[in-house]
Length: 373
Ligand SMILES: C[S@@+](CC[C@H](N)C(=O)[O-])C[C@H]1O[C@@H](n2cnc3c(N)ncnc32)[C@H](O)[C@@H]1O
Image (cartoon, protein in one colour):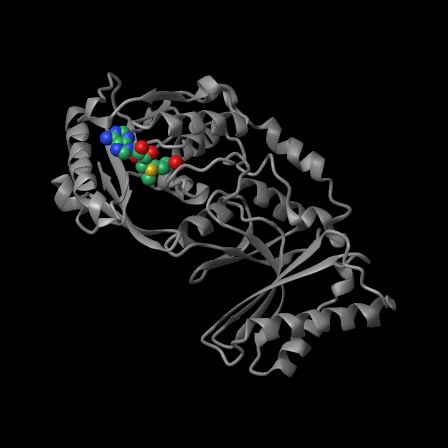
């Protein structure tokens, strides 16, 4: 049996349940949700597949060591307990990031330099290597210090998993891909059912729905940090990628469309669709104010991320738009409508209490996802 690693998936607040459900559905082991993270176990193959397949987590890490540390000496000892030569190549660039909260060790800079020193000492002892050119690919280590519990994490993803690679041009208020995927999941929409985003902007919700519909792994077109780590040299990354490609059902993508009043945003949406490797016709795009929208299909789902009106000058216009969403729903009684906003007056402006609500964060902005069945 392949070695199982203890792993850690980062999860935005409010998304832990989604992350943990998805990891379980991927067949990963010992899945346990925490506050802002989910723990699980996986072999190297499983971890690579998960990096490509997960929709809601931002990064997947291996937990190399964990323990209570209240002094730099204990941090040094904890880092030294790892067999770094298993992961480290002669020329690895040691990239350490650190997050400290509610702990005795609160200096990120000091934690970073102690960790780096301990790694170098450890590799020197194990291999006899004396010079560290750091000219190669990054060995990305994250030191997480929370309530005096330190976790030494090896970042297997590299760049955040929300960066699927298709959104290279951003509109004014883009939505993170992981959050867009969560909105689609929480809406209860199932592939094959009509889906429409009446404020589609640069198309993130539509693209995430199309990926789900075509069973396309969101990270299939990108690289991951673990591909460069020494311990995973034996993994057949190309065969694992191919195994996910084989199960794609691109021909089944249908009924997904959206509109926006801004033609420039729609141009960006078109580019993103192509960048995502989708057929341009796989998603319908229209330049239309939602006040004029009228569809002749039944039983679909509207999902949208309308403007929030954070600037006072925009507030009245946004609140009017929320009522226009109510009228849109009224014109389409068999459709469900789901909208996310940070505006506490959303329901009042819309004109009806939502059937279900879910608190989510758009970056640092606390929002509510309103679902009208
Ligand atoms: C927060 S952005 C949506 C961003 C989008 N989710 C994305 O991934 O880029 C809100 C969008 O609503 C659009 N919008 C504002 N008023 C509208 C209206 N009356 N009808 C249609 N779209 C509108 C804006 O042009 C903007 O693109």
